[in-house]
Image 1 (cartoon, helix red, strand yellow):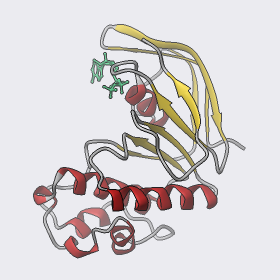
Image 2: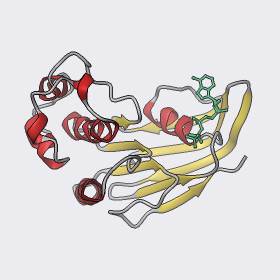
Image 3: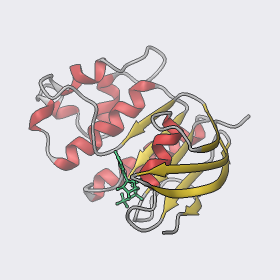
Length: 187
Ligand SMILES: Nc1ncnc2c1ncn2[C@@H]1O[C@H](COP(=O)(O)OP(=O)(O)OP(=O)(O)O)[C@@H](O)[C@H]1O
């Protein structure tokens, strides 16, 4: 059983066709890295998989997904741990556990609006954990991360896959933690 299936998908955005006839399937334990120049539709593909965009043609069938991109989707006024609680489900890691896993346990009480760029990326990775979704959609997850954070990212990716999850990620740089299949989008 696949966690994500795209069948002959076409995506229209910003007044042009980004891609068409795109088919892929991700089974539990599988990871796919989407590469390609700026503007070719990597983020749009992730939003299609998340159900936030509708395909122009074709079909998208996806298990519940958690999208992490440059918008952290956390209330900027709340303390970090409390802001994560909004997304938390009982079967997944708790906000405190998720923060420890991305090395942010020490700033759990700091309001989200005070976080640095790299800390916000890590907070987004904490959010993906507490959502408990089998499909992770990671948009440039290593952007702005320091070396220790990239190592933690690697562990999180490996752990999610070994637990039966799947990952679709967009990145301009190689990502650790998995034997990535690759999909290159072209202009
Ligand atoms: N909200 C939007 N409304 C209209 N067009 C958009 C919107 N977001 C993105 N686009 C357009 O869709 C195209 C693909 O953008 P997308 O962000 O998917 O590319 P990308 O491959 O992820 O790029 P990058 O490498 O720069 O992150 C671009 O031409 C962009 O201008």
